[in-house]
Amino acid sequence: MSNAAPTNWNDKIIAEFRANDGRVGGNFEGAPLLLLHSTGAKSGSARVTPMMYRAVGDSFAVFASKAGAPTNPAWFHNLVATPDATIEVGTETLAVTARVASGAERTSIWDPHKAAYPGFADYEKKTTREIPVVILDRR
Image 1: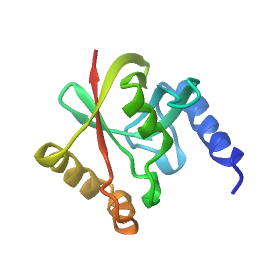
Image 2: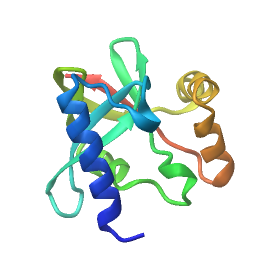
Image 3: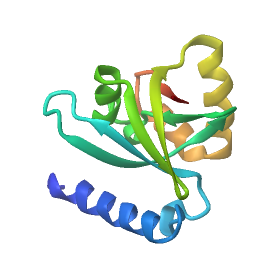
Image 4: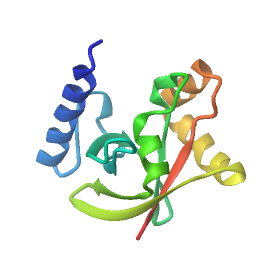
């Protein structure tokens, strides 16, 4: 797969998300989806990444699964380097600060998420790394 393919795929999801008040069809139809605006850890460039989330109180949990790849996704490294970010959820744009969940907090979010969306359990089986759960707290 070329480097351009994910961007083109993401660009289509981003456009559909924005055209339909945060809703998309296809593989993500009916799933909770947000657009994460982060800053490239190396480049300093603005990045937008569509991803599923789980509501956690007034915050949002996202999952650095990268479809079970052996490494974490770029957006995870971006948030660790620059935790202040922005998300689009539905028609709202919110300022957030990212933090990585651990221990019981991680388990209490990850276990019900992979039960509700078994693809995430499949990703977990494909990799030896612990898939990070990132909490996006409203600022």
